[in-house]
Length: 341
Length: 250
Image (cartoon, rainbow over all chains, first blue to last red; front, side, top):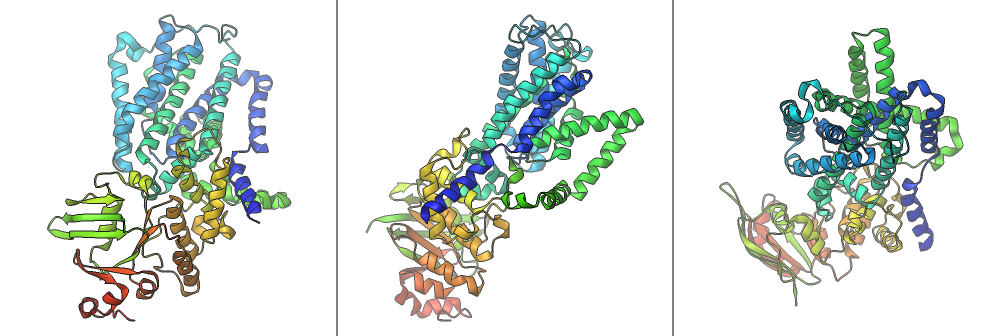
């Protein structure tokens, strides 16, 4: 009797760690685009980078409940770190990536102590402020960053000494996709771990989390630092694959766009950032081809609809429909947390 | 008798209000001790001081002889002082299984573990099962907490505190708001808590106090008014006077 229950408990808990068919298909399709959509590799590269950036925001917003309007600070720092290293002769991409991750992580760790105090409004303002400060520093320190002219003269070496970047963006896309996939696996592992569970509990009820003995602040500092490193890697990927960095990487609209992307795709859902990035870029592409001056109007409208109608409700309807179609699989679907991965 | 939890001259002032007035209190090892008092007597403030949610203006708190006055709340929990809340404080989007699993993982030091899938450790599973059985939550383990019946939510509230393996458990009105039909299950579970856990029960419900506690302390206007066995306190005319409308033997 009791062993049956133990088995049930174990399988129910471990279930969340398993890869679903949909997930495997997602990554297989992503890999397949390397062969089947060669003319789209430049934009796909951009999508993957935005997706990774949104994934990073999701780690703090979706899983730990930390709101941020200045996530571009880490993205931009990562981009400049990788860009400046490459310009000054350290052209190995992976080395640049690691340096960007470390630089962004350090900034994340230090600023986490400012961010973690106060209400959501305080957090929004502090994160916004940090990004603005960094943007102005990059603007003023033109001897280092190129200032408003942008950072020029970036020449990347081949990845692992083997793969040269090409003008079609194929190597770039493969590189960004691989890095994103690896970081995704780590993030996925984290969110189903006891540590990830503790983050969700902090997000849902910090008072109770403390009453269970969770060192709330330490956990949040850790995830904020990690998310900063992720954002730094995303920024570094952009710098390395486009071989250019401008003040734009630290601009407010970067932070706002990534929030938008995440909301479109779904907060607290690891694929949300990636799906949101695809939808966002495709929409931007389609709408701006149709009406180049007003595409932001439509993006804005879609955002309002998504938030008001509740993405949860929209996806829930699709899921119910799907369940109805699938019929027999309905029973095996978990009642909760299915989309917590 | 060893002392599980002790306060010495505990004072808390909010501006001009003396919410806790020089309270020196002892909870004996294995005790079933009730803390009662009229509304506004400072019971919740006292609990918040014990658990470290607020800092005392003066005085000291000891857990099993060691001073914990300045310790952060989560460290007190790790030392063995757990509480339940008067109003459910749960994780609405999580399942009871995840909630209990979380508490057990944290206590066994697995909370920092970011590479292991939750539920892959045998001892944790066994403990979850044991707690779920003790608190009659087996049937609802995989439900969303926000969908549970209120009585089950109350049970989960206690189960989570219990999963922290407390030496001292503070129960803040465990039966508050539980409908009659679900009360029995809850009271039976509370009564069956193991004796090596010392329990301080904060309660309005006199039936529960008299059936559960072997000692009662009465708090009035932030100060300890009287203390004694159930019999002493229940027959004390001054206690009746304090409760006025709220007749003690009702």
